Length: 262
Image (cartoon, rainbow, N blue to C red; front, side, top):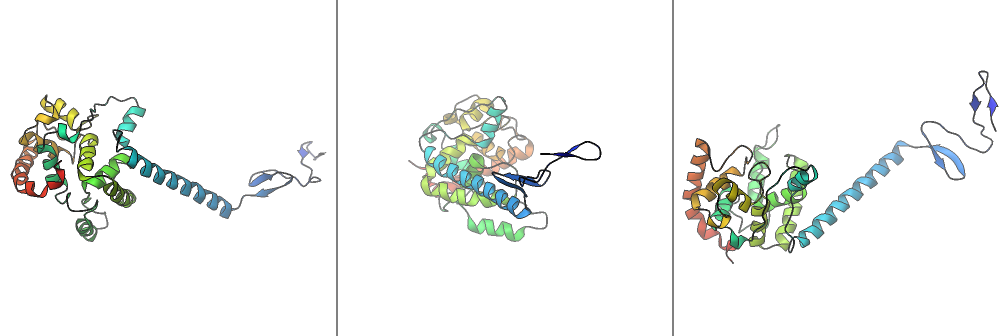
């Protein structure tokens, strides 16, 4: 029951052990109790751990599922969810000119056939050379880029890099090198809404990916570090020069690309 105060407002009775107001929470059959900072912290930690475990489970099962299902990157999902146009035609590695995987390996990850997902020496060199503004480059291998594209976000950070490493090691463990390269060439971004080698070859050279020349493959590979600014069909002077240097290096890299063969 309630009793009026001097202004006629109702004041809750405490006869039944009930109390209300900010900072109190209802207990069934008991009085309201304040939410402590410690309880709030524990609840937040539990939610955070639950989300992490959910993400780990998604990585585990999707990694296995992508053996048989064409993979989808986070950038692709973002465009689908926002109803933005997108071009991507998944093709097997056999349907891509052998010049392109060789160009990408030579340009992006020369030890692709030798490491197990992470080039530890290159990564350690980057960490040692980092200043107060962070590392000047990422030392990302192709498996690390696949991990980022499939399960993480594009913005560079130490948190993202830390998550890339275990995912890259896992994917390299369960996939062959050929499958890793196939996935990478089908989810790589080559322009606004252009994903994968087939869509890129059709857009920039008006031909299937299987017919790409060595020069065209080098131009595509050298566009990957900045795909929104570099146009393989109309390369800048610097872009063209980098592609020319890559063509020369590809001949020497061929003996180290045995893992790309069927």
